[in-house]
Amino acid sequence: MNNSRILVVDDEPGLRRTLKSTLSALGFSVSDADTGEAALLKLREEKFDLLLLDINMPGLSGIETCRAVRARSDVSVLMVTVRDRSEDKIQALDAGADGYITKPFDINELLARIRATLRRAPTSALSNSRTLKLGDREINFRDRQVSVGEQVTRLTPTEVELLHYFVSHPNSILPHERILRAVWGPDYGEEVEYLRVFVNQLRKKIEPDPAHPRFVLTEPWLGYRFVITPPDKAAP
Image (cartoon, rainbow, N blue to C red):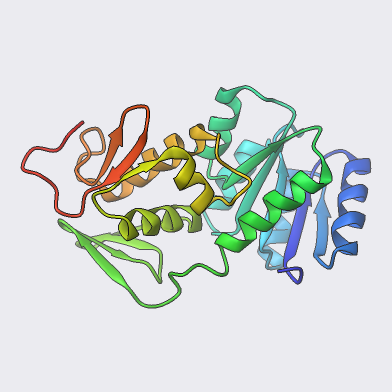
C-alpha cells in the first residue's frame, strides 16, 4: 500500500509541503498541485491511486474538480475541508468523493482514512469475473459496470464495494455501523450520511425506479436490507 501514488491538491503551500514530506517519509509516492486545473492536467499525464483534494480553492473548486475527475477516472478521492456542516460533506460525496476529512486534522486520523480508502480500490474482493442479474440489469463486478440493454453505467470502486457487501448478506437487516465498518473501515461507524449518499447513488444505477426501490430497502432508524428476490410489491 505504501507504494501508492498520492496527489495532494491544495492552495496552501505550507500544507502541501507538510503532507508531501510526511507521506513521502511513510513510503508513499507524493505529487502536489495548487489548483484544480493543475490537478486535472497531472491526472492526464500520470497515474495516481488517491487524490487528497481541498474543497476551497480559487478557480476550479474542489467540488468542481472532483466532478471533472469522476467524469474520466475511477481514482479514489478523499476530500479535505474546513467545513463541517453535513450539507457540505454530502455535497462532496455527491460530487463523487469516496470520503472526506475535516481540517484541522490529526495526521494519524488522515493516515487511517488514506489507508482505508486505498484498501477498497486496489484489493477489492471483486477482481474476479462475476456478474449479477437484477431484473433487466446486469452488474459486472470486474468491470464495475451496470448494463441495461445497450446502455452501460459505470460504478465507482466504493459503490462496487458497497453493492458487494449487500449481495453477500441478502435479505438481512444490516445496521448502519456494520456497513460502514465493513466498507469504509474500522475507523468509521457514525458517518451515516456516507451511506445515505452512496445508497442513493447506487439506487440510481441499479434500481428500475430509484424512488421506489426493489433491491436496496431502507430499514428506518436501523440500516438497509438487500432483497435478492423482491416481493411483488416493494417496500418504500
